[in-house]
Length: 435
Image (tube, rainbow, N blue to C red; front, side, top):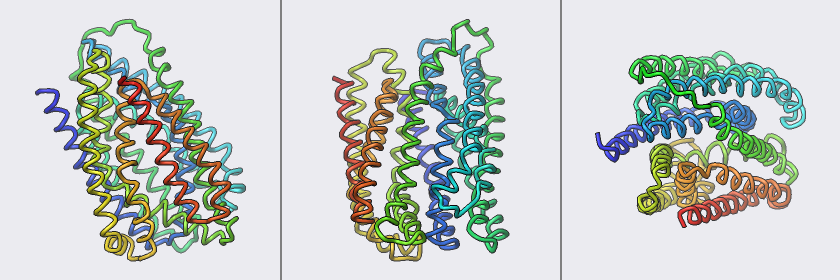
């Protein structure tokens, strides 16, 4: 099959999968937000942002390392090394995830007491840490399938995981709902953990079946640990900083609302309205671009390995052009139909204003995700993370200053400033890279 045909088939498969997964997530989030309320949504969002930092440590760029190294081995015809690459990356997954588990368990009592105002105990964090090794290893296997241009198997894994999550969380919520806010969070977390474990077992079994097709030749004695660490150390360190700053940013937002004069409950509710309800709706159509963006990493890695600069430039122009057209259309649709979408998804009119305010940012947000994927394929992943870190540091400073003074209006301004800053720096980096 021709590479361009394979690329588009995989892109279409990922797009359809992402649409199915996001639809499940969107409608389920709508159901959850109506069932548990904006305050619980906001609290759960904070818990998941801290969990997200632990996931970053557990991953440490291992997905990117697996994808890039396997793509490089395929480009130079050393397919006998693929199995060795996957095995080494899985070993690193266990190391990284063990560190993440230790840190999350150690610091969760302090986090709950200081940052979450004692609204929940550390128990949810102890439980959720169990899933970290499985998430890390699943990411590694997904990186393998991405590198060999086989998107169907990880796509089926995503759908299975979401269906399991919906079924399990619904069951746990019905049982634990009357027990209070902490048990609502526990219900959501238990559903996440069990679905992650079962998802890993499924995708790992798919890999073991696929492994039989790999080259039986003896792998060479190349020092893979060094190549893996050359990607994971810089990506991991900058990811830790970026994710840590992102977590601090998410925690500071409701604190800033409180300083503006709002109660703790109202602060969490406002945070839930924007971050837990409006933003997911605005980013939902981006799944079409993200599906193809993930496939760009191995494609641009191979083009870069072969020094095909002219093809890289031509492909980049086409991708950005069509992404811009798509994102402008989506921006207009969301702005016009914000009332209908808000009521349809959340049975509420409170989210309309935030959808309308965020809609003009859509072209910037969507194209930025494409530019980041291209830069990663061109071995500029550290530059991408440095830009994200600068963006987050700037945001945190603005959160300290603007949200206590202007409340939710200050938060909207910060979102605009952040997206424009990140896009400008990323696009400048791409232009410099492509000369």
